Image (cartoon, rainbow, N blue to C red; front, side, top):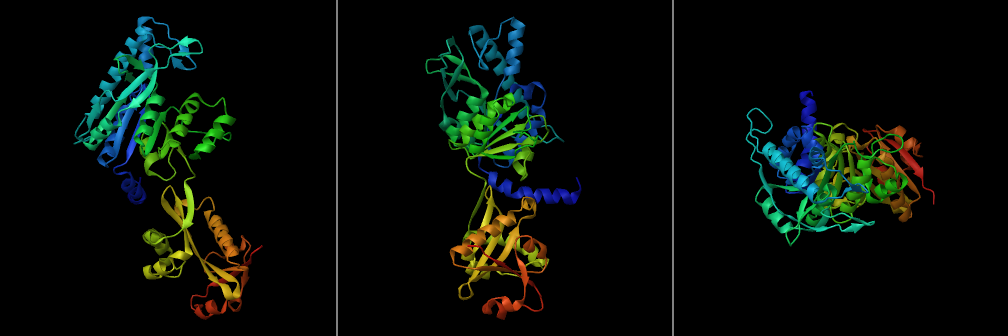
Length: 438
């Protein structure tokens, strides 16, 4: 990476760094991540998140390790709809495998090797009986025995550990109030823990790149409804997707802000998903990530950050903070996942039944999907509501964009009298007018 590229990336990551401080993330990873040696590099990324002030819970599975111990002992594995039937000999293998994986994870998190990303790391790990479990019981005539499900999450104890700066490590073993031990599924423990804590993010690391549509394209963002529709239309979806995507939907519908499905095969996938606007996996949210609303005085700083580079290039007329504050009610802002990515203003001239479309700006990283057209439609709708018949715009650089969207070039004399008197003949902006259909 060139130095300038690094600087640009770091600046783009800054808003995420600020937003994530003090937030609660639940990271769920299968035992294959440890078995295949991938947790060594993942440790570095967890260390970085911890140093940035993220409150972390790591939920780990141990399925391949359990399978290996069962095979060693010659035990026949039994499943019901993908869920292990856990008899007493199998439970012993589960306890041994989960304990081994937990110790291995703790050892990696305890590293502080010089000249490595873990140098001077001070990750304190807390593991305990945070999960109260209950038996799944008999299903479809099969007694699942020591296979259980989460009954309760001790959120008070978990929050206490995180408030003390500790990373909380949870395995897929739960305990009943009477002292019984149950084998739990990774997805149940992670999802229930995240919802109980009202976590900001639930991140599943699994063996796929994310949700892929019929054209082979990665779906980087899905609402809960879109995810449910995908599952209904793809009953034969990849096993991991069909397992984890419903959990992502369940999480966001029950208070988790975002759920992510990320590949565990890509080094740094966790950081790429969290600190770049496109991400590398699939993010699921309860509602659409983009919202268009009226600007408020609190938006002024973010609006200026979008406007000022274009003012310096001469694309936009200079506007000071005071003018923006006075006219903020004329502006609308487009947000993507809480980040301001677009603005537009409407200035009505009621006597002429005309209005000006002004200050239409889209962040450079979000111009590929023609969001400018969305802002134009928004202003047109506003104008019609005000009884406006014609919309006009002044531009020095984007003539073709307006022509492609129904504007026709006009003369300065066709502008409302008030605007014509303010026209800057030195700037020589071109005038475009669009007749609004009722």
